[in-house]
Image (cartoon, rainbow, N blue to C red; front, side, top):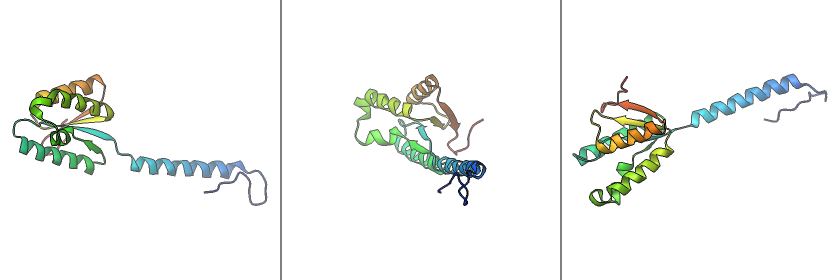
Length: 141
């Protein structure tokens, strides 16, 4: 929007310029805010009933998308090409790297596994926003 400091007669007229510049900046900020989606780390169990836990992690990730966030769920990714029984330490290290890139950690369910406990401790140490949800996607108080 070509905002000019001079009126149609060529005289310096700062008031409309400043007002229109402010409106334009507010509109730009609103567009930017509307498109912002934070990275959120999905913290939920993997081991145990793996099939059920993978299903739930997918559900939790979809929930994050619906809530305008970008979910990071390493326990859905790394088992695709890593062996849980021999490479767990490396997977947990990579989990922590990804957690560090996220602005929030969303913890799901009533069961906190050993891996989840380590992730929550890391998030607390990094002063991340940690939100707790039930398996039914209700936020806990």
